[in-house]
Length: 276
Image (cartoon, rainbow, N blue to C red; front, side, top):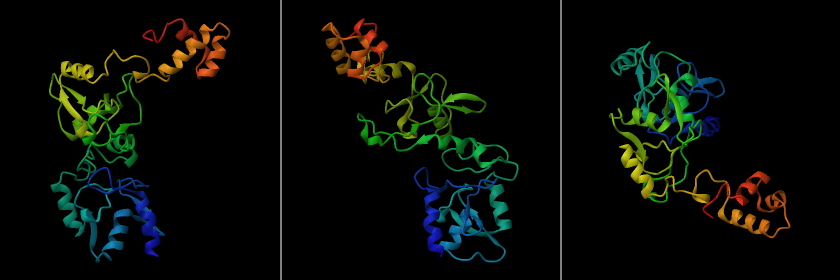
C-alpha cells in the first residue's frame, strides 16, 4: 500500500531548486507539507516512516536544514522535543522569530504567517527554471526566467522589504548580499527576465552600456532584430511590394502578410521600419 502513496508523494516534490527537496503540495500554517496517506500527515514524517521506519515513542522528526517543507531524507533526523527546541534556538528560529532558513532566501519572512504569505515562497513560484540557454555563453546553463510582472525594459519586478525592486536584484540581495553603491546587477546572459544567480554579476552603468553595444542589444536594434518586434523583414518587404503594384488595399495586403490594416499603412508610409 505504501508504494502506491509513495509514487503519488514524489509528484509533489521539487528536487531542482536547491539541496532541499521542497514540497509543492498543500502545507499547514507552519509551512510543513501535508500529504494524505490515507489520513492527513506531515509530508516529512510520511517519507521518514516510509524510508527509515517507525518513529520511537518520545521522538519526533526534525529538519537539519531548517526548511519546514523539505522532505529530503538526508535532511531529516529523529530527535526528542527538547533536542529539537535547543537546535531551533541555536539556529535562530525560535518561536516568534523567522520561519525557515537555509539556501535561496527561505528566511525572508518575520513572524508566523501562512506558507503562501511568505515572500520567498511567492518569489520562487514566479520563476521558470527551464528557460533558454544563452547562445553566446552556453556554459552558464539555461536561464531562470521571471514569469510574473515586468517593467517596460523586460526586467522582472517583485515587492521586497516594502518597495518594488527588480527581481534579479532581489535574487542578488538574498543570494550574494549587499549591492555596493555605484554598482548595478548585470546579466551575463543578456536575458532581462533572468534571475539565475550565476547569470548575474556586478558592474557599473558604463560597463553595462558597453556590453549592450558589444553584444548588439542596444538602441541600434531595428526591425526583426528588436526584441519587441512581432513581424519580420520579409513580411514588411512583401507588403510594400504588393501595395506598389497599385491593385490592392492596405487591408488586402495585411490579410496576405498577416498584419493589421494600420500596421501595413505604417509600413507603406514608412512611419515604421524606416531602415528597410
